[in-house]
Amino acid sequence: MDTCEFTFISRDDSQPKRTLGIERSWDELKAEFGRSGPGLPGAIYFKTISIEGPMLFAVIDGTTVLYHEHHKWHQYITAKDIKFGMVNTDELNPMRATIDKNYLDDKKWFVTYHS
Image 1: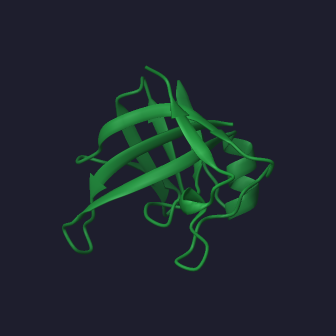
Image 2: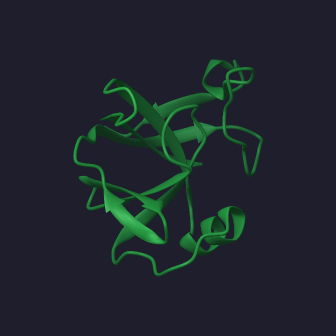
Image 3: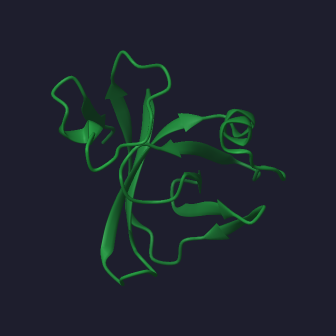
């Protein structure tokens, strides 16, 4: 499963946060999260599976990260360390991690990054 990971500074506590998402289509994400509105030209869309970060996000040209809120796309000004890779898992639609179940700590999950 294709992934994207990035870090950003949270507006809630001004601390860096790390987000990991799995690639999904905009139509799949709209259906799963009850979103509406158009997608973005040239964007790749991701469902967040890490504890931190937005429910979903998009990346354009590998350098611009956006989140979807109130039916609109908003750019992360502080997004950095954007990495693409793959996660190996048997789950077709993994749920988002929680404090009780952090998939990134699970031994059956591992992420490999493209160089």
